[in-house]
Length: 505
Image (cartoon, rainbow, N blue to C red; front, side):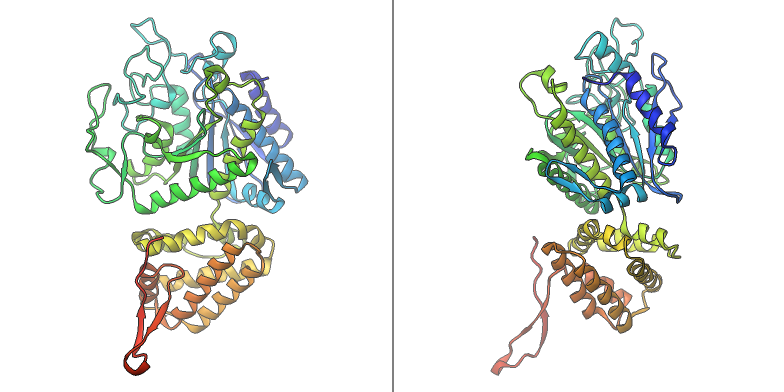
């Protein structure tokens, strides 16, 4: 029914040997506590360096048997779809052939199906409810450290479902990253430019995101985990403490999670809940929080959006919930969730520029997005609009070389204009941009996408002739769809245009 550690290793080996143009297997630097090799699989199609990466981890908790199998099966599904130029269908959710082409052609997909091989082997041979790894805890009769409490993010603070007792199922270990299995995950995050991370667990039908140690707030940036005292059972987090997250990242986590929930629901109608991890229970030292926290603790690290999936329902029977007699349908939900995250991790602007070899300083665009637009509610709505429309449109753009070149040229123009705030966004610039938007509109029958494109074209038309400072200020102050309405004066005259007050959606 469920694959053994040897069978999982054989599957990753076969994929890499038989399809070396698509898969590359990496033996990670550290063997498990009991000396087993640990393997990761990188999947990609085509060339190109410094790709955006997505890291998918399974088997962190030994008794959660479904997810390593689901990850291996997803790799096979992606391979077959890529080779046969077909799509992937899970129940009622369909990814087209073009969708799959973009995913495997744009991303480095890193798969670590079985992060904790010793624990999985113990579950399948001795104790089917074992959770931890197989570390011998010196000076105690107890075995095991919880790999999902061992990361260096508020490590060693015992609260909620984190313990400092070596005998507990949620034992955090003797020090942060004391466990080789946890260090292997850190190595992968250090090695590639991971934009997304997911640790796939069971059970409860949840899509979780940071934070796990405290509730989130977006007003006081002085409350950061880097100032919290840590260490095994030497500190606690006061109830008045709330962890800071930028409004932009709150938006990113909530919108991506909502889309993943929709992807899962489309499969067979299962309704997962998207929420911060602390809503399930308080935790510290988790992998999802660590993946995201790295860029905050060390500004040289790349920002990685970290998620945790809890697959399958609570059936009322613990064993059946962790490893059901027939996990087929749950694995299908899990694969849809992972594939949905991959699709949400593609960046259209990066992909267009790479594909046409355009010379564009994307850092300029990122700065405008993160340091300007993302600082206001209206600006964040424009960011969300772009992220909404890119997913259904990117495959169509990639299949039209002329349109892709036009899009790349526009990105280059935008970069040049942004380099100098005094530069004018000319009527010619606006005309070119609107023409591209009209072409994109003809490529979709999705009404919501058409509305977003119309709103963008309308705003661009009103911005021509303004310098870039005015353009950016307009986007930061007026949300998509907000319009200027003339106000009636005395005797029916319209003395001037006024801006309608913005209402939050």
